[in-house]
Length: 581
Image (tube, rainbow, N blue to C red; front, side, top):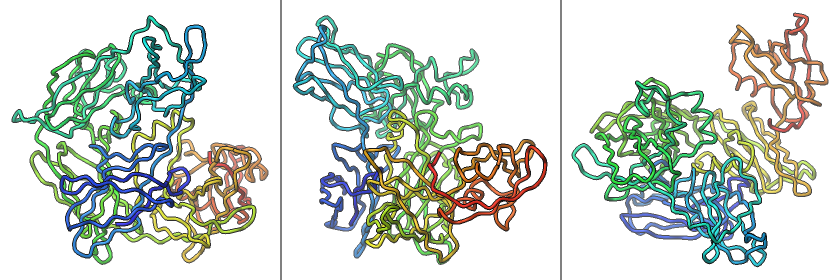
């Protein structure tokens, strides 16, 4: 088994990362080398799991109930290579601890009392930090975590690293302030026979803001949620979770002194409303089921031995839950199996959406129903994808860039706090490659936009797909004077929206200032009729972006219906380098 630990921000290898491997109840640990590479030779055939990867400057890869790790089934002669573990760099918040006279306090302790939005298993292992000789400290920015400073018998007030927190922090010690004594909710999960159930995720959400307040509705009834309000509070409200131990026991907290809805994460109908501090809470899990699947190539039935798997549970009203209750309905894993087979156990009965992606294939989705006490079997063929080929170079010097990372792109959130929220779901990427010494890459990743990046450069977002056989030229612009990276693309400077009363036509929502589109006179409200020699009517937005975007310096011909005059007109625009908005 060979692989590499890399940074999600730069794609570069992470040296001295610690990788944990489980085999038949035993734990082994290996370390990445200076380039981030690691190698492991299993002593015998069998099932192995990469159960963790960590480094002090990154959020650890620590699989839990919602992220099952990397599963590998070794047989005689099996070899797994190019395993990539992607760790996300931590955001940090600096601050100072002072006494009541505002003097800095050296060697004071700053304690994390909770891990906020992050699962305790996935949060950084260090929970206590010490100030330097000037009273300064630097701690990971963990959204909604609670912290408190301490020096001798003096303590600060408990602070929350929430969305309104401004860094640097100032924690003031008070000799009269007590040490934090925040409440927990404790209990256990049992099956229908009364036996404890381990490895079950339990969630607690604030009852005052998370549930619909109708007298005739249960606290959470899988359909009585105020969706508009819920969508808002998911960005600012707290939620806490725990995983049951071998004896089924869980402890959630520390919490604020208020009322909470506590429920088995994948079964919101189990919700019980209790006060923080409640002990001996009992939750009952219905009889679970399991899934056994087979992933293979559609053209020749050959097994696909490396793929990512994402499950999302449907709510009883037919809508995808989408993880809106603390990522309760979202489970992902990365499978390595020579026969392309996977198994998922302890699944709550219900309807699920399964998404599978593999390097060299288009992703596929299937819906399945898991029955109580049953094993659901299904097969998922994947279509081979046409590879995207390109050469990545320095935009200033033209020199090829070795080791640039190419991977599927997702829209980032803005700001350290929002970005830190997304770290709660640590990822591994089967769809990832790096450029060779001559800057060349090849990646067959279906229809997903691609993200191309190298340390010290602005990333490039590639939505378009070149003609078969065409080799893209991607030029990354170097960062200057410590500037923050800005994602760029080749385009003309237009944003689109559906035309009123016409869901088959896209019209211009916005024209970006200083862009080729603005210089050509295109206006908001103009309707897009054609792109080059093909119609733009009745096609998906992604197809519009694929065809309008392209390499800077190339041209695209667009035909519009003016929203002002009602006349058709045509423009030929030269694509330029633009910031992704």
